[in-house]
Image (cartoon, rainbow, N blue to C red; front, side, top):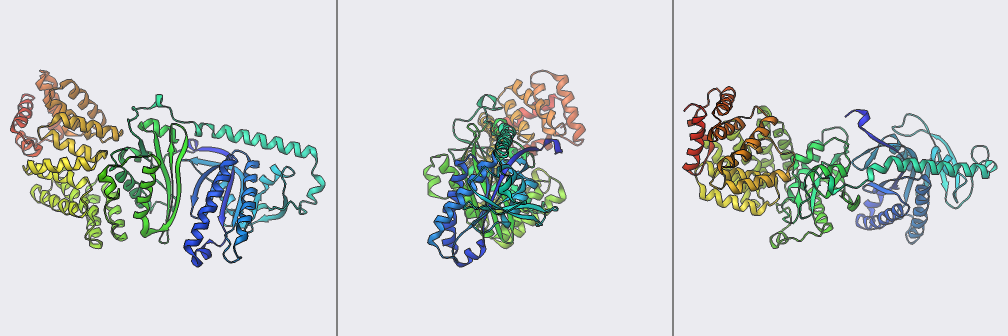
Length: 623
């Protein structure tokens, strides 16, 4: 990303945090949290009442922004006065008091969050405030002096952590007293200066509103790249890693993937696949643009900070068509509670969108698998990240990560599923021992089903592995069960389509593959090969040709595109085109033979295999 691509705006920044929060939670964790929750509700209401926006929560901290610095100041004063009244019922030892810092500065806007020096200064001002007090920067003071019912105490230039220059700041005197500052502040407050300050506030507010206006513009159904589904639709954007550096990216990405997988089990919800949403990782994209690109109404976004055995998560669900927040929450939990936390997020989304769960979905939690050992989970996520790099060495290292996950938790169903998938890919993609790897695929998938019978993916593996072993009745039962359990999971839909196109059901394969492609608008190129072949099998040759040519445009090195295109051209009588496509196959795979194809393709019915072979012979491919 180049600097010109970063969205910036001038804004009033509000930062609040609890003084002595760690001590209070140590004394009474549950009681402190109950009080904090109520106070955070009050703070949120006051921010929104004054026209501000809560950017995010981080445990006991609140970050917000305002178009008007005057509105931000009035919010801070109102909050502190209300909290002071509420705190009268508590002793000094258990009183929960916020400190608030206010700054005016330019920020970077990314995924509805704000970053930059302006935010850092606001946080440092908060740390300089008294418990129950407010500290403002010099820029804020200059804008509001003489226009508000409060006094100020000049604290001078303060040196603070991670800010190179000293910050001149002012303590707010909430009772209206005016402390001497800058050689007698009261002596030079004049009507003219008040009028100038008001005008400056209006100008700053106008500039801030103008800069932020495009960001708040709602999405349009007319601009959707794909038609909106007839049920609630959602894209889960990759959560932002706030832990510093990239070492925890695997964890944050894995958590995002878990949310997508679990939401895909809800039949009343349309969910965009991981493959498509992760194309937005690290990109500054407006929510409404994402919604229009993917053809969805709702977008879930958030951030994760993982440190010292704790995890802080901020999440918000946005209705892109209205530009409003449907639900937002902050979580500050021990790392071991990550699975329970994910379940809570899923439940909140289901409730916020009023999704009607089926009896089977109500009978169990959305994420039915028991929480694994944390070390096992970490190894699993490392393995998934390694396998996504798609090279042989990382593929082998991924297998070791999955094995280590099982060493830490032998009953971890997902680790067994991924090891089963690993063995399937070892044969299907990398060409390792077919029979051995298919046996291992079935063994791991069967045990995964025993441990978590509500997960679709091990059933997909069973369907594919049994099909290639010629055990078609078993494969079909597994395929049907997978479809019941993963009605909106793109990976499951595509896997079932692959099974069905080779099992005598190409019409259903086409329907399922098109569903998979709608759930995954940036789908892998090989989906087009499977779809093109299915069109060939039902005699829709024009659709087959268009689809396979589209695939070649995306990846001209993928052999099945040329192979199925050769067969299609041969059947419709375009023999020269068929021979050119066949020549591409032989160029990419010099040792290609029809007998090798027959042993690899996995057709259930001989008639379907004969149709392929007849067309490929006509195209000129060798026996």
